[in-house]
Length: 343
Ligand code: GAL
Image 1 (cartoon, helix red, strand yellow):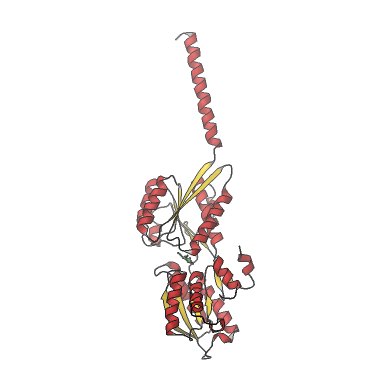
Image 2: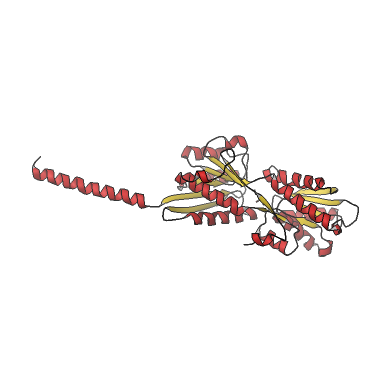
C-alpha cells in the first residue's frame, strides 16, 4: 500500500474510532430505563387503586438523571386468562420488571413461565401466591402485609370499645350479637382476618353470638346487599359488624342508611385498610375503627425492589424473609393517631 493510501486508511479508522467512542460515551451518559409493567386483579378494588397510586408516586421519587422510570398499568377485570395475556403484552412492550397482583393466587404458572423465558423478574403483590409456586424460579418476589396481624388488631379495637361502652350490648344479655362480612373465599387475608378477629374478642373475655356472615368479595355494593339480607333476618338484634375491609364496612353502613335506621339504632362497625373513605368514616364517627394496611410502605418496598432488580444495585438495603418475601406491618387506627394517616 502506498503512503497516501496508508494515511487515508488510518484517517478512516481514526474517524470510525472517534465515532464509536462517542457513541459509547453517549450510552454511558444515558439514563438507565426501568419499565415497570403492572397488572392487577380488578379495577373496582378501592384499596388496590390507592396502592397503585402510591406505587406511581414512589417510582417517581426514584427517578434521577441516571434512572428513567415508566409504569404501565393493566386491569385484568377478574380474569386470569386476560392477565396472562397482559403479561405477554407488557413483556413485548419492553417491560423489564413486572408487578403482578394475581387474579387467581393459585394459578400463576403461565405468568411465571413467560417471565422466566424472557428473564423478566416478577414482584407479586397483595395476593400472595402459594409457597410452592414462589419456588418455581429465583426471579420471583412477594411484597405484601402480614396476613396474621389485621384480624387480631381489629378484634382488639372492638374488644376495647365493647368493654368501655356498655350501650353496645343493646339487649343487655351479656353477649354481643355479631355478623361478619368476608372478602373472597380462598384469599389469604380473608381467611385469617375473620378467624383472628373473633378469637381475639373471645380471648378478651367478650361473649359472642354469631348471627350470620356473608361473602362480599371486598366490595361495597355487594356488602350492602348481604347486609340488607341479614338486617331482614335480624332487624334489631345485630350489635357488631366485623368487616374484612373498609369498603365492606361502608357497604354495611349504607344498608342501615338505606333502610332509614336512626344512627342510635346502628350497630358498631369495624373495617380494615384505612382507605381514604374508611378514614373519613372514622373521623365522622360512622366507622368505630379500622386497621391500617400500609399501602405507602408496600409501594415503597415494591418501587425499591423493582429498581434494584433492574439496576442490580440496592438489594442489600431491602429486608427479605426467606430471600423472596417483604412483609409490612398493619397498625391500629384510633382517634389518637388518625391524623398521622390522613393524606
Ligand atoms: C386486601 C385489602 C382488600 C382488598 C384485597 C384484594 O389486602 O384489604 O381491601 O383490596 O386485598 O386482594
